[in-house]
Length: 143
Image (tube, rainbow, N blue to C red):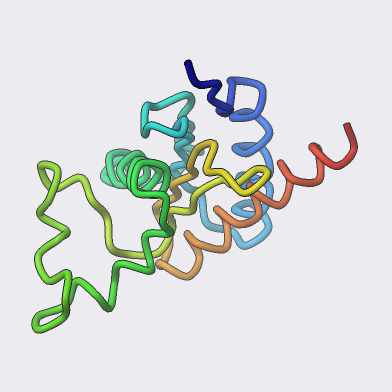
């Protein structure tokens, strides 16, 4: 038997709130998805003005970050023609994302979930995702 630590709905709400606050600060409404350690969706928010087309992208970025236990931008260079993981973005029915904005959420050295953000540039998406994680980590430290 194994005990698994994973994000819950309260955690997801903190992650979304932290991410959304940064999105407001930079003036880019985002789609924000939170998944558990297996890549299953826990919560999602499309901010007013977030791109409808970014809904699936945010969810898949979070899925990739939690399921593959790796930030989506880390797949970018390795998935280009001639690179060792060329074509990996077509894996898993096309759900594996290779652009910035998906980050694993790590607690005590283990990936407990993921956050995926989309509607801005990859750098903006990644910064908003990081802001969500930073807010969550601050809340964990306060408890």
